[in-house]
Length: 136
Image (tube, rainbow, N blue to C red; front, side, top):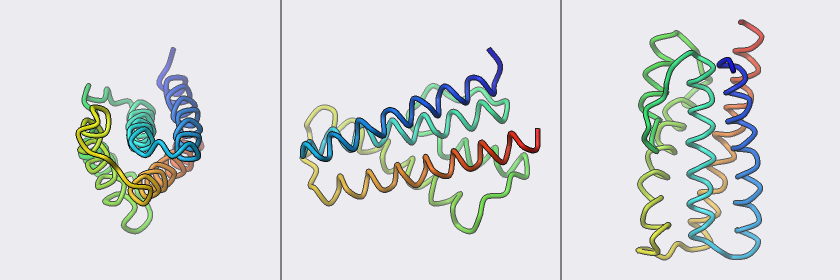
């Protein structure tokens, strides 16, 4: 399996987990929304790293690595999108464990924000995948 195949599988899985996050939101399972949103972001960024030929670290927050590689490879991302994606990855990775272990109760608003953040990263990952595949 090559890097493009791995990217496709990771992005597809992120898209499927996004569906789970939306169903969790509809079911008012706010902590689960936060957890699933974090997974969407992690898989999206790791898929892009694979496509760029980089083995991603085995950690949940790969935002810093992603930003560093984009800069090293001169991959341009519109406006403040790169720093936004990095911040989203960091924030959701930080919220992941407290959400998972019910150490913190998340609100509807926090779940809504997490879901929106995951949608932003996934949409950008899909757009970047298309751009990178066209230039390959």
